[in-house]
Amino acid sequence: MWGSVIAVVGTLAGATLTFWYQSRQARETREFDLAEKRREDRIAAVADLGAAFIVYRHCQVARQKHKIRSQHEPYPESVLEQLSHDVREARGNAWAASFRLQLRTNDMATLERVSKCFVAIKDLNSIHNLSELNDAAEAVRQEIQDMVQTAREFEGFVTTVSEDPAAALPDQVSSIGK
Image 1 (cartoon, helix red, strand yellow):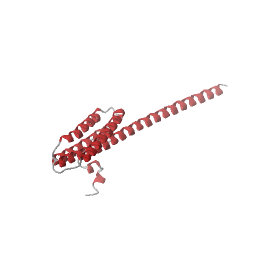
Image 2 (cartoon, helix red, strand yellow):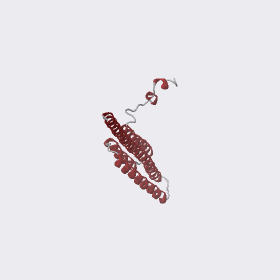
Image 3 (tube, helix red, strand yellow):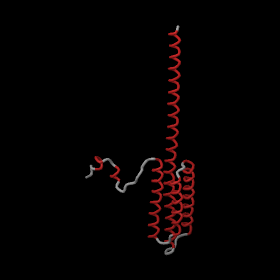
Image 4 (cartoon, helix red, strand yellow):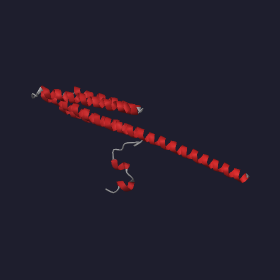
């Protein structure tokens, strides 16, 4: 009889341990999947914002180049109106993408970079020289790239940025082209 009791207790203990282990594994898998989905959402939000900033920058530069050139040669007013409409639409899309990112991250460094990008793009409107505008547009592009880089560092993709892309590769791979 004691043998039967021990067998039943052993079976119950085994079933309980198996249930506990499988429940823990299922919970950990759900938590991992949820964390990965949130991470992917943040990455998508940064990518969308970067793309929206590039379009906003492009529209702002196009409008400002038109304003500068129209000082020397006449253009129809409708062209400037369309360019201004494009800037407003691109700015709205950039703000929408910014809001999506703000809802998905608490990384203050990335959010500060986002603010800097908005200011830098807006400031393109105050430049009245084509060469200065081109230089400023390149600086804005770099600011956008820096915002993306800051977000990448927060997400754990990279820890440092190297000027030489081959430096990030293993020695045997980077020596192939030598």
